[in-house]
Length: 249
Image (cartoon, rainbow, N blue to C red):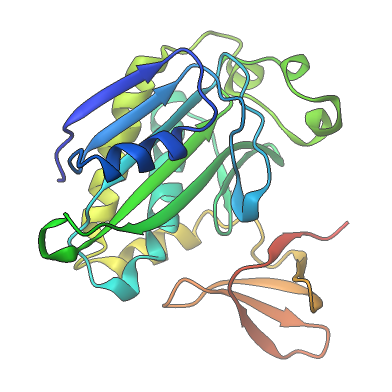
């Protein structure tokens, strides 16, 4: 398992990923963790904003994983599976994962993941470092969030009706994430098979949209490379990366 070096906590910052990048540039070691009680400018996939009110768990983990460069895109999937498993094992919940980076409970989003690769000249062997950003709606209430997203999000508190200890949850998540990232070296296919068991969109009507093209079809799971497979309206299987994948309707 990869070791953790230090945890740096803030009551409020703009983005834990941004601060983690700065710390990486300063030479902070792999295993450094940035945690914030709230974020003013949390970011999701493709630059979208991520609401981060007090009560959630928002953190970024700086890692220098010893895995082939072609497996770096799988870190998002490994992180999602780790978060899903911790929520299940700790609270007996049944989360599902929406490719590539969201965790859902009861059909509504409860967590998001944003992984970013960075290359730094001072890094040993010029290895690529990865910032793994995670935001989970934990002790929040729906009214803590912007009105326009309240219908599509949920929180752990909504399901558990008890307050969760954020420090303990953070410890469990960091252990699970670092374990799964390490597994990518020799067990990547096994990990993807496990991920597939919790695919929110499998055999469901989906829409995949990019600036140039919109595809309607059915979710067919992930490829060995971590791309998502969609069977379009003509029965043709397409593998997508990037863009926005969502349930249809």
